[in-house]
Amino acid sequence: MNLEIREPDDMHVHLRDGAVLALVLGHTAARFRRAVVMPNLDPPLVTVSQVLTYRERIRSLATGRLDFEPWMTLYLHAQTTVTEIEAAAREPSLIGAKLYPQGVTTQSGSGIHDPLTLLPVYEAMAERDFPLLVHGEDPDPATDPFDREARFIDRTLAPLCRRLPRLRIVFEHITTAGAADFVRSESSRMAATITAHHLLYDRRALFHGGLHPHLFCWPLPKTTGDREALVRAATGGEPCFFLGTDSAPHPQNRKESDCCPAGVYSAHAALELYAEIFEEAGCLGRLEAFASENGARFYHRPLNPGRLVLRKVPWQVPESYPVAADYTLVPLRAGETLAWSVAGREAVQP
Ligand SMILES: [Zn+2]
Image 1 (tube, rainbow, N blue to C red):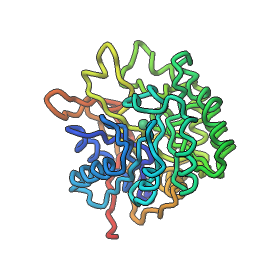
Image 2: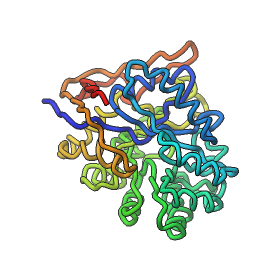
Image 3: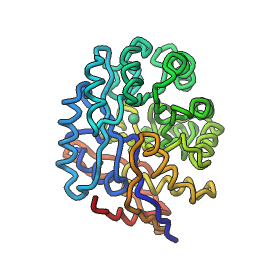
Image 4: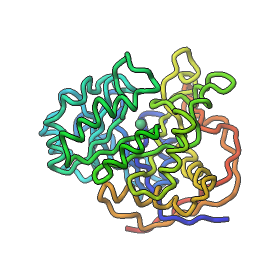
């Protein structure tokens, strides 16, 4: 069986930098025509010129896929100025600015302690229709880790929506039924990305038979009911939900250490995993809207002209990918067989 869809876009990915960038980029560009690239490098990309330099590094490595287009994001921090936002909004390859509440995930130490203090910056963004991308978790250490998303909606996102009715917002990698409903209630100006791993796994999987470091990510996977609600949101055809893998590699020796960093690597099989989810839900016909249309429409960008073919041909995911002498990458579903494979994108000359 074949499934042909319009070329898709990954609306949330961590390509990283250094030795791992080429591998991640290869996996992403083989499946996606465009990708929204996260700015949480070390140090984070807080100026337009830093973002554009990183974009050039990505472009110079994407030699096998010259049509791959990275859409860049600016990292918001306490000193972000309205002038920087104006410059970012003028740059066609920048698609929005990313809000990391301080301390909630990888490289968020320079994020915002109280996200509501940046109001003049958000106002400048609303004025220029420059979207705000949010990692939606409450940074208060007193908050229970499984309640961080719900608490973020109550303490930050809902008040922000009331203060700034015109600001367009992407609620990244949602994990709860409550977040999906909140996005629906604001869908005239808000959308959400949903990862493959949050559609496939609930929190039981994290602890099944022992602790699984390669499934550990922020935001944490939640209950079975939450996972089922996410599947309904992704596969239901609603335009306010779209594909964003949040694929986030870390070296095996750090993931399997006494303090495991957060992130699931899924770029090697992203589309194949989403196809599995949509097939299981009996909604394969809606994969194209979720993967290739809803995101581009939200960001007011043209749909891709090319096509991509998925085949029902099983393949085995490697146990790991070698990156460098001190960097081995363990992918999601390592060593397991996947039902769908990607025949590759068919490049269309612009
Ligand atoms: Zn992310």
